[in-house]
Image (cartoon, rainbow, N blue to C red; front, side, top):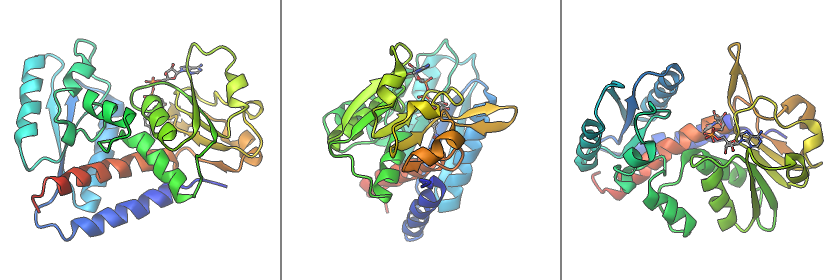
Length: 277
Ligand code: NAD
C-alpha cells in the first residue's frame, strides 16, 4: 500500500488554512538565503507557494556570498525581535565560508521552524515539546495517519544528518521503537535493513535500497530526492520493492509534501504561542 503524503499533507494544509482564515493578523515566515543555488531557488519558490496557499505571509531575505557573518546575525536578531515574524529558517546549503550551526543558533528557538537550534535538538532528546525538524515530523504524522504503531518495532534509519536521521531517531525512540541508525561507514548495510520492520532511507543515492535489502511485509519510508536528467528518483528502488512490503512512500508524493506541510504547521504553532491574534 502507498503511504500517500500528497493526500495526507493536503488535509493538514486544509486544516491550517481554515484555522488561519479566522486570524485577524496573518502568520509570517522568513527564509534566509545566502549565496546562489539553483536547487534552493526552487525550494524557496515552493515554500512561498505553499505559504500563500494557506494564508501565511512569506519573505525571502537574500544575502550575497560576499556578505559578512555579522550582517546576517544582525538581520536574524532583527527578525527575532519582530513580533510579526513567526518562523525563521536558513536555506541550506550555504557557502562554505559560513558556519551553518553557528548562524542557526542565533535564531530564537521559538521561531526555529526547522528545529535545528541546540535548544530544540536538546528538547527533542529530552522528550519536551519544542520545534521539531519538518521532515522527521512529517514522517511521524504520515505513520500516525496510517495508524502504524511504533511500539516495540525494529526501526532502521539510513542516514544520520541533523535535519533528518538524528531527530527521527529521537522521535521514534520516544514512541518506544528500537531504533538503529546506519550511515556511510556502516559495514554490511543489508544486515540491518533486511531486519527492519520499518526502514527509513535518507541518503541521497538513487535506488541504494534494492529488493534483496528489505524485509517481507515491512514499512519503507523513502526520504531521498535524486534528480537525474530532470527526473526525480528516491533512495529506494520502488518498483522492485513494492510487492514485498506492506507500506511504502513514493517519490515524488511521499515525504516531500509532508515536509512542506509541517513547515506551515510549525509557523502557525509559534504564531498561536505568541498570542498576537
Ligand atoms: P546528508 O547529505 O546530510 O546526509 C546523508 C547521510 O547519508 C549521511 O548521514 C551519510 O552518512 C549517509 N550515507 C551516505 N552514503 C551512504 C551509504 N552508502 N550507506 C549508508 N549511509 C550513507 O543528507 P540529508 O540532508 O539527510 O538528505 C538525505 C536525502 O534526503 C537527500 O536526497 C535529500 O535531498 C533528501 N531530503 C528530502 C527531504 C524531503 O522533504 N523529501 C528533506 C530533506 C532531505
